[in-house]
Image (cartoon, rainbow, N blue to C red; front, top):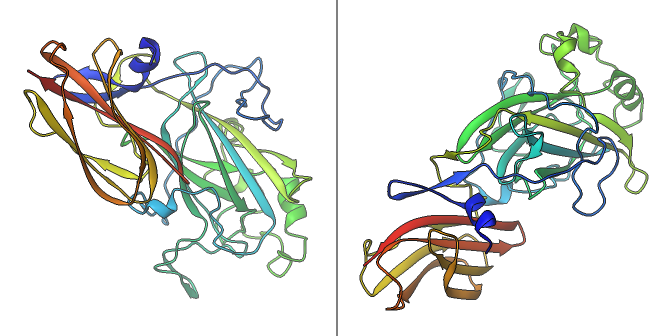
Length: 345
């Protein structure tokens, strides 16, 4: 691992591991479909801090349920397909993307109903449709597969989202929709039974989006999805994140594993690493010195779900001092990494 990459992964504060805000460059215009892993960033524009909005009455924290780290949030509910592509960037660092941020979204189904709550005329307590969580990739991107949301009395069409840096809630906002496309969608057979939103006819009349000077930065760029039918919505979300420095919390693990502190710590010749996996995964366990040099590949291979303990015997030629052990887990949900500091005698 190169030192620059290593320092993006961990930082050192006292005896605990901490996470810096890493970055990557990108310059592709917003609104066009990404090719491969290219990042979608507005060309020739400045980063803009996403307007903060209310969480509303229907948020749920599903982060302890690993199955909710997912792209497809529909759970089979019908509607016109909508792919939502968000790119999370740092307004303090030349609009550079922020990897490893957790993004939560929630919205209504086509009939304007949220999951998980008692609402007028319907009870969806215990249900989780139209909700999902993802971690941004190295280009600061997430993609959700959902449907065009319906409307309910008092609000215009929208999607809620939250962004966490490490475990810190850093932004709460909402996505807005172009009115002409919304009108067209609500005329289609799937949506026509409810028809147009007469309670809030346009974004300017909405209690959240009425400040159109801010709403422009929450407006999805909507294009037709010729391959899947439906639409693609893209949005670049500006975050007020540190340009350098650290967040004094461990990075998110996507609900895929739990890494414990090694024991004993400090240790002499040997120490044991313990961790739990929520599903079968490819696992890599490595040890680095504080310059980012790999000093040991402790384990690499497939492991089943459950608790695991791996003992490492330190090379006697390694000097006493602080080291970093890093667990990387790859499975059907993606790749997740966490690091901790330990002291060897």
